[in-house]
Image (cartoon, rainbow, N blue to C red; front, side, top):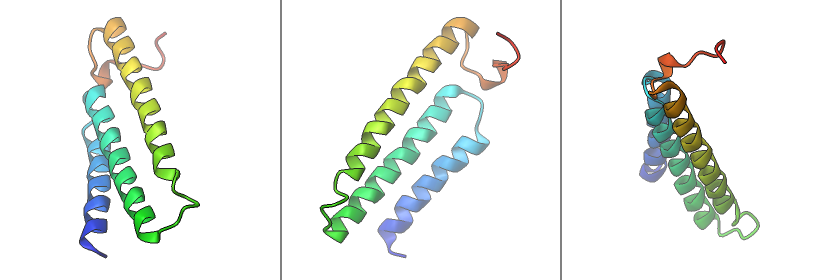
Length: 98
């Protein structure tokens, strides 16, 4: 495994570990998701450059577009949660309450 692939995979797994273990605030979960998507984008872009393939050259941009949509939906949920509950703590959210 080359050092660049190790860097991108470790960044992805650090974001995944942060998402799994630090579930106190919704904002920290969104930041971990963005870190994971950024490491996937960088790894996919580097892979496309090394392959010199034009058939999958739009894939990193498609991933980046989906990442931007995910970020905007997450921030909208964060604002809605902060307005209704007064906090972004994940423990204050209850699925049984409407």
